[in-house]
Amino acid sequence: MVQRLLFLLLAGLCGSAPSQAVPAVGKPNIVFFLVDDLGYMDIGANNPNSFYETPNIDALAKRGMRFTDAYAACPVCSPTRASILTGKYPQRVGITDYIGAAQPGKWTRPTKLLPASYAEALPLQATTLAELFKAAGYATFFAGKWHLGPTNHWPEDQGFDTNMGGGTAGGPYGGKKYFSPYGNPRLSDGPPGEHLCDRLATETAKFIQANKDKPFLAYLSFYSVHTPLMAREDLQKKYEVKAAALPDRSPKSGQERERQVRLVQDHAIYAAMVEAMDQAVGKVLQALEAAGVREKTIVVFTSDNGGLSTSEGSPTSNLPLRGGKGWAYEGGVREPLIIAAPGVTKAGSVCGAVTTSPDFYPTLLELVGLPALPQQHQDGVSFVKALRGEPQTRGPVFWHYPHYGNQGGAPFGAVRDGDWKLIEWYEDGAVELFNLATDLREKHNLAADEPGRVKVLLEKLHTWREDVGAKMPTPNPGAKAKQTPGKHTAVRAKLTPE
Image (cartoon, rainbow, N blue to C red):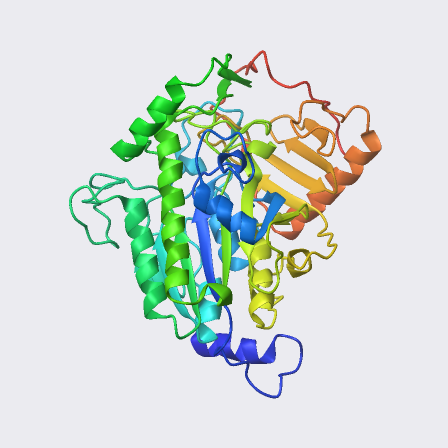
């Protein structure tokens, strides 16, 4: 595999090989932070009124570029993670739901549709970012949540030299969960009570110090801030006091279909989890300083889906974004994204360019001077121009989630093209159309007023779905005879594409 990747790097997949190899020596390092379930509004850089305190992430934004319109490829975790590592929409690799969700043959809920089947492991044939950078001479390191397959499909099988804590599970479910002993097959236990978030940052800092004299890729994929909701006692107490001092902000919950949705950020345990994650980010950034490599290291900070607001404790509010994790609305798919690329990004800059998960692959290749691999990152579009402050228009971004998540959402497809976003609900073919420039809250469905635009966007969505080989849900023989939507279900125009 490594020899084949090295050949591809030399040839550049451009029809002819360059005169000589591109040496890794002197190339920038990469630190990639991926936070689990962190909402767009959960960091101070995006939300000055946030209940949560994220000084290290905010400082990163002040020295890099903050994106306002960055998207995850899916409103749940595993598909987005696969998309980042492969440069493809998750439908091309078959991972369209979180790994561990019930397959259609074991589906027991009386929903109108049976969810589509999905792949339960990232294919070993996929050329991951880690494999590519390893072939180019980079030391590669992974810490934290993997959730892309069982044994023999873990980080060490997909190009990472070192794996600290990445396995099959989608959360810290062994041992004492977020505290040692962890019961994690890829992470040794620390002293009793050691916090997982800090431990992963410590291991990442050690890797940086050990590899400061050669190029490296450090991929810190936090288990935080995913459930179970549990936090360090000192931070929890801090936020309990802070929450008690807040003025009354009723109502604290609203309605999204049949689910209640949190409208206020005041959850002390979740706030403590966010700050502990921020402190871990700070430890890694300090390690770059201590190793003397900050100015030769590209830092990426993002999340895998929106904040959890409609289930499992509903710990955060994504307002003004609608919905949250598991939903088609902006609260489920719009993500925090900060990139600090020395010599490329302007300190404190803000960018409104639309990006999505597959775009990281070609962007990182271009930033470090490695040739593009269009056959691999066939859905990704480099946004280096945007990082330089130059105008860049990506074109439409797409979603396809043929499943029922745990958070109350239903199977859907969606497309954003310019300021317009269309959602197609697979249960009944209903569509919603929003102009995000004037209606970020997605409250005004314009489908009935814009039939021509609906037709065009549906055609783009259906063409894309066919291109990526998207699987569709099917009628469920065990469905209830009649499904009654919640009384707050959005009014949607029922338009059938021609």
